[in-house]
Length: 91
View 1 (cartoon, one colour):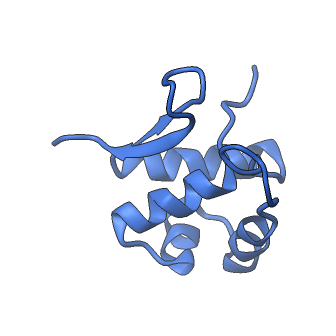
View 2 (view 1 turned 180 degrees about the vertical axis):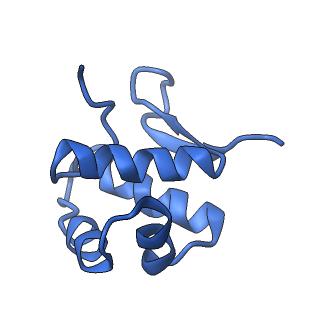
């Protein structure tokens, strides 16, 4: 099973759309706050769409699931000419 890719910038943008702090994301996904801080701090410069979120597969899945469960939709670079992004699903 492959992990769906998500960039660090997408995670930061998703948190901003939800109004979540790093500690809120940590609590919602069951990952420690220092881990969230470390993963988000590793954002590479000059990369289109930002650097992919690193870490263990279980950690990436937990973060992605928490954000998607809160209504975030990840937009992959292949889905749009504008590149990767995030959107808040309509309720």
